[in-house]
Image 1 (cartoon, one colour):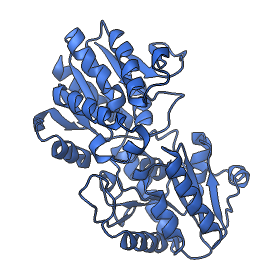
Image 2 (spheres, helix red, strand yellow):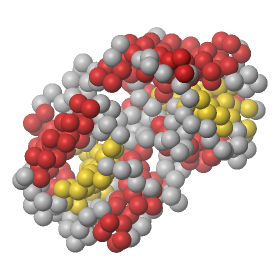
Image 3 (cartoon, helix red, strand yellow):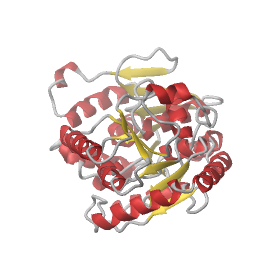
Length: 393
């Protein structure tokens, strides 16, 4: 059985949860399945991996058109595959084209849904309408759709009610328990200006609307003064959201010290040291199909405070591995809170509840590591994915 996996992100060009998922899934599947990876970007030297730059003729085109150009080249190279598996809309057109061109099954994994990310119009302009069309076409014709959480599965069926529910399967994300584990490294903390003697609240994520970072910056104003805020945040979607975050950080720094902003992408060894030293990890997302970063924090024995939305409640066990922050959300596709001030206040109160009780936070962190070991191994996820492939061949 040869599986061709189609993806925008693949090491070393990984910037989000989908890229982490693809890298770990490929590694686990290759133990007993032939997997050929087709990825966007620069050439890789990994055997069985092909890379595709944007066609020169589309260098100045809308980003969505550039994506379709890459997808056509990828689809052409899937000849000989028994099945193609695409991840995110960026590779969905390649998967659909390969399905038609070669007459083979197409599996698509839903890491997010374009209609539930309307802020992408800021980034893609009219290309956002193209990305929505590609996703609908790919999902509608796919032989199977994998959702990374039960919450994601509900969203898929709500956004695309024409899909047969039997074709939509939940196979959750996982975490590499060796790569992400407790690491105590004072040198890493010192290098980034983190005070190990102060309680710390850590955020890790891209600067994008869905991650809710502006809400966290407002909530931080309400935290006890001894708490430091550590932001591992980069890769902004647009100049506008970057400017908003920069202004929020600048304003916060006029009111309190201990605001640390790490803009570069940290290697996992350093990031796990930052997470291990944290009193609490915070995921203030307004849209999160699952949130691998929550699993990474849990694997480092760090308590997690997360918004009670999407797949986060399937990862964070309220009162056991962390706390969930209630949110009432608008139904216009943005996921924005209907009452932003209440959400900010609830976020701040929940963070403070955990951070002022370090023993309880440590207890939640240990429970989080145990839960990650018990329920989120990549070996089990690969087994479920492999079984799905076999059912389609």
